[in-house]
Amino acid sequence: MKMSGKQVLWVLLALLGVATISLLILSCANTGRHASSHSLLVAEGSRAAQVQGGGSGIGESAVSMDPFYHTMYCVAASRYGEVRGRLPESPEDVKPYLFVQPRLKLDKWQMDEDQLAIAATLRESGGSTRAAEVTLYRRGTAAWDKFMEGGKRLMLSSLREFREKGLQPDYTEEDIMQGRWSNYIWDNRRAHSRDAADYEQLIWSLDLAKVLGWGALHFKSANGRFPANPQELIDFLGPVNEEAWIAPATGKAVWFVAEYDGENVSYTPSPDLKHFELIVPLFGAGAEKRGLPRGPQWGADNGYYPGLYFRYTDEMMLVYP
Image (cartoon, rainbow, N blue to C red; front, side):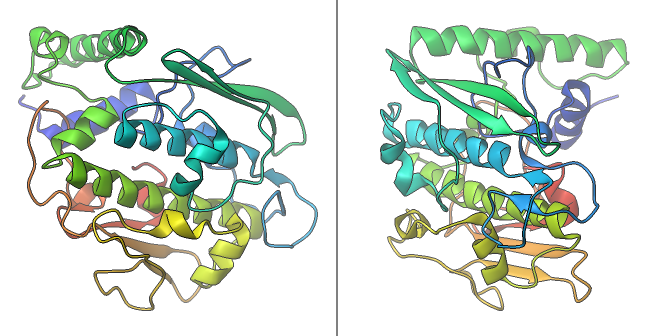
């Protein structure tokens, strides 16, 4: 049976047990395993609870925002590295990449040649704490190459599992080793971009969608419903960094509008506040793509409308991006 790119993507997610996330994660201290976007970003359970560290002023907390904020720092540092070709030397460097200011005290922000460690002590939703550390690597360095070797081994292992299940993906072991096929998230995003400027806008839009969408999921874990309006969501997440909301493609700041207009963000909850729709503009990014390396393809099923926008519902945010 021949597999489409979309089928390959969803099988990969099922086999690896993770959602694609824009982090170069090597290890999380005291866990001994790779962390998924679910374990980092989405509080388990749908019961109403109060949030600690959030800006809602609702009261005492049973759900901690610390893992979310730690991930925000890592996502911002990763995008900084992709755009600037080097890693940020301090948390202050990534402020223009943080859409809201994380309410989290970091234990470590340590540069070591071509890698960066970001560590914090995180409060868990049950009241316990754990140490978390993420290591990022600069693209094109020996440390990066070593990190990517591990990723290629995972891709090869997945390919063997596909074949054992009778599936026939349209790529080979050689394609993986030579870099002609990759399911690595940064490679995949580059392949959907025309050039460096297009790429910067694409990842800006996707990261904004992630922060807002995952933030809304946290809000529901805390309050038993989704935010009634954008301001309630922003108040919950924390202080806005205005410079981060300037779209790379236009040089103009975006904000929320009641109806999507192609230039700003729309957040639309359902009347019963049990669901939402989120749309973030792309300003033309992704309309053309370089196409290499080959890999899982984005499409409407993944919330991606090339050149137009990312559109996500609450159900889609649980598994993608």
